[in-house]
Image (tube, rainbow, N blue to C red; front, side, top):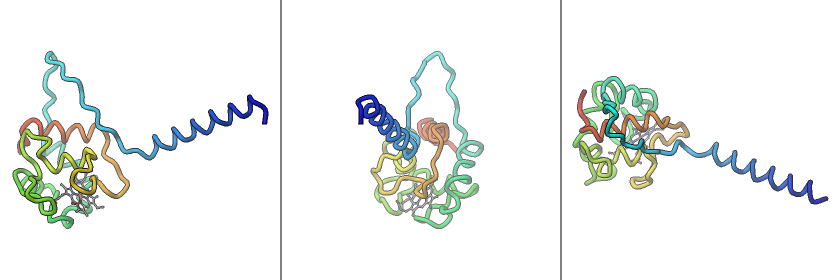
Length: 142
Ligand code: HEC
């Protein structure tokens, strides 16, 4: 093989590898920089967070881990409730992302077993951000 062909072969394989890896990864969580002049983008539980649960989680979560993420049950099943599989940790601690099992599961931290959703589907960065903001803003039933 002459040098040019060899080089383009190597570059080509590296590119293929890069593209392949990028495709397999879930969305990375990238926190938004905080600009004090920007108004706070309020995250609403009932109109923004619940629809994420219905679309991505509810097929497994009326049943799995005694956690019902349905429209009428989700709030009462999450906020200040002790985790069934990861006790004594709490599912959602208002204002405290690091103490919230839900946050670790959807941000892919690997701290509490499987990351959610575990079936090869992914939340978008925007959806992860909405859950982040909702917990950080006090996990209100708003
Ligand atoms: C394919 C089925 C499936 C889907 C979809 C799914 N989960 Fe789960 N989930 C599980 C299973 C199984 C467990 C129990 C194992 C564990 O805790 O890791 C679990 C556990 C959890 C727990 C821990 C509950 C506790 O108290 O122990 C949370 C929180 C959770 N899931 C949130 C979610 C969220 C949010 C979504 C959607 C973004 C989601 N799950 C989607 C199957 C699923």
